[in-house]
Length: 111
Length: 111
Image 1 (tube, chains in turn yellow, cyan):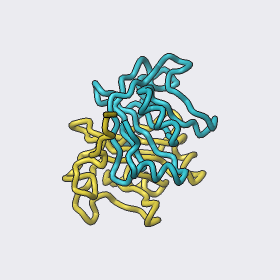
Image 2 (image 1 turned 90 degrees about the vertical axis):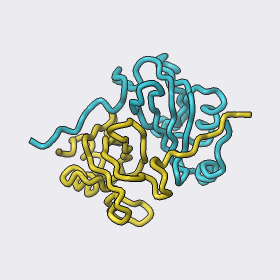
Image 3 (image 1 turned 120 degrees about the vertical axis):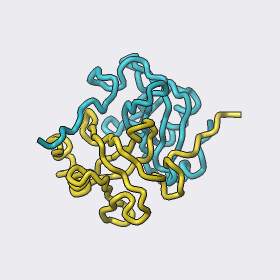
């Protein structure tokens, strides 16, 4: 897979791209994190989803320490080229808390 | 619905929160946009999804000109409180291009 020109232009400006990971089987949204050019390039070539950690300022291949890897199945990009939607095969929990998805808490309805 | 304390703290810092809209029926991811405190508060109280436009620097109630509204059904927030997952009832196209979803283009597999 090659980085589309529109996305490449964003990355060349130094913009980080939001990457949404979705379970390819259930459609569940698992997490959102960030990619720079190197992270996206590595993800597309290795099929092991790799993000850019803004807090640690380094590449972060999902599951490299936890074993909870994400295998890239397919990738889409949005109309203005600054967000990606990744269909992934998620091993184990996507969230560092041990939950399957990072979006495990609901905003409570009004009483 | 009330803004959770963890999300409120992010917004109080001036951080914009990423909001992912997902079709409540199909599970399709429709778009990603941004919210500030006012946008989220308005969304939770009116159930009409309202974003913060970074390019226009103003609130933007989805569908106010196109008629392609998003009705909020439920909302979840992620483990570090800087992203939201909105289950929505989407009227018509979510994307300004007329496509159902903003993620209508696939990154082509390698030849």
